[in-house]
Length: 377
Image (cartoon, rainbow, N blue to C red; front, side, top):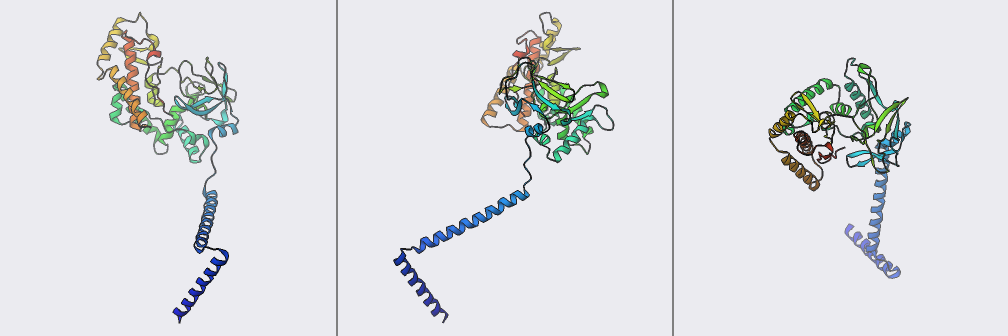
């Protein structure tokens, strides 16, 4: 009986379809296809709407950019954070005359600690405050780059590539100092960021103040032509150098007369053409500014002797650095070990070029002591 009823129903459906096709030129296949497409679109719409609603509920509010965060805190600026030849840095948003103000930051926005030791080193106190800001997604804290690749983070096989035993001893000493300061409560990345980005706000001895200053610490180092900062009442002001800066050009900061050893140990990079770089010959520390035709011949002889004792020549090192730059061009970004190796090469090249100049061979000026620019963040 059931089979008979099913057969009757099937005949009725087919007769109805035949009638509608003849009368209204209707194609059942197209009808079914359109129905399925309509239902599919309806389902997609419903689920898209559900996903969008849940994304609003679950997704945290979009954080402010560093510039917007600083602007809302009263910062006055003629620059923005952008890509430069040195990596990320400050870019002028208008033409700036020599010694003109580029940035004015309220002291309230900075993280400031006195050098007084109390129970913790000032770097540890600043690092803990920075870590707290990171935990709350503070725009300044989360805008900071990764911790610098200082030699204390390097692989031992790369560290020996600096070809300087004295520097290796300093790296080991710094490694254990960092471990002592960090303890169990201070984030090591935050500590290294503090050590490489903090500035002095004046004072002397234990009364001096050290600070992390948003936006100002985005300025890259440039000797001679870099700008400088001053404390004015309740503000920190960045002024451009004596040459001025044109719109779209980088605004830099002169970090001070420090040797390449200091820059590498604490900042994780080797500045090119550093006029303050120095090397110890006997009991005398010589820099590029000490070079002259009247330099003691004994010092020249000692420089020549020391240069000959390196396991690799200056020409070999320059060639290796060139190969590394070609590899980076060919294979995109370096990993940490490759960047560390490049820094080690740049360091030992800078020392050999200074020794070569002391020995009386060219170049006799730091501006001619050229190796590739470190283009990290």
